[in-house]
Amino acid sequence: MRAIVMREFGGPDVLRLEDVPEPGPRGGHMLVDVTLAGVNYADVHARGDSYLAPVELPYVPGNEVVGTDGGRRVVGLCRGGGYAERTLLHRRVTWDVPDAVSDEQAVALALQGNSAWHLLFTSLRITEGETVVVPAAAGGVGSLAVQLAARAGARVIGLAGSAEKRKLAQELGAHAVVDSTAEDLTERILDAAGGPVEAALEMTGGATFARTLAAVAPRGRLAVYGFAGGDLASVPTRDLMEKSLTVSGFWLPQLYADRTALPTSMKALFDAVEDGCLTPLTGAVHPLGDAARAHRELAARTGTGKLALDVTR
Ligand SMILES: NC(=O)c1ccc[n+]([C@@H]2O[C@H](COP(=O)([O-])OP(=O)(O)OC[C@H]3O[C@@H](n4cnc5c(N)ncnc54)[C@H](OP(=O)(O)O)[C@@H]3O)[C@@H](O)[C@H]2O)c1
Image 1 (cartoon, protein in one colour):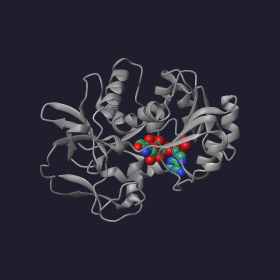
Image 2: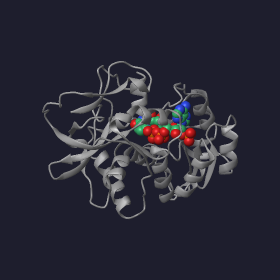
Image 3: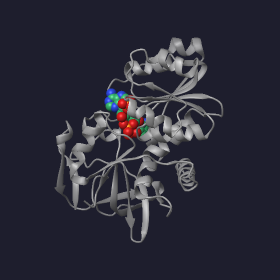
Image 4: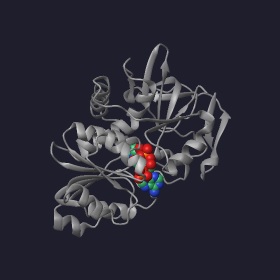
């Protein structure tokens, strides 16, 4: 079968199309014919050997796919192996896709949708009327988080790196938008929100973590789920005490073995799409062999919505 194989860590060019043997059978798993493989920021980290989970070479990237198992259309999560014509999905993290949900929408919901849902409703416990900061508000996780938070009655302050992306974030439901690259990010968030915010998501790390935390009100909450900028931030515990802040961490794979967390969020996400309350923002879809191009786009911050690879092309 065709697959993207990484034989070394490095830039996008280490992602090469090869013919490799299909994965053998494995207990608890199903072998799926992949239609679309989702591209996520975690794949960029895995390529550069900076991911939370250690990566062993040779490695086929990709942590989510939509595909078919006989007559069933399914979407599922995996730990590598997604950028391939066939992959193994554990049955516990694989779901039938409702007819009303397209392949492009389903692949946006698996990793990024479930992350957005649990960040807002499990980690931050957002409630109606609260103000929440959502970074990369036109990106994969962010575009879904903006819609979910707004639908829950929260006021959303969306961060995004270009005027086009900020306009998109407003169309998705952000009440105000801020340039994510601004040096005076804290002041801009405070201006946009009319004061300190009750809750914030943070996925860039480094100075952006500190600037976002500084905009959180006493007794507020911040959930950390990424370090796209490459620098892991340190938590200033003195500030946490002074302001009675809660900073929590989030990594979706910690929910894979939980029997209720992902089935609950996946159903809520499918229902919301079917009801027309949630519209996954589909982005560029490249042929499998163009995985390197997809990674370049993600790291360059140029894309919007869900980036995916069409494995049938
Ligand atoms: N912990 C988890 O379980 C989990 C799950 C899913 C995703 N994540 C994390 O969530 C974040 C978003 O992931 P995604 O797959 O949905 O990607 P994405 O938002 O579609 O794309 C990444 C976006 O991050 C923003 N960004 C900020 N600083 C950046 C930098 N230094 N380099 C590149 N991009 C930067 C850019 O938006 P602007 O230009 O608009 O600022 C960029 O478009 C990543 O940090 C990822 O690791 C974590």
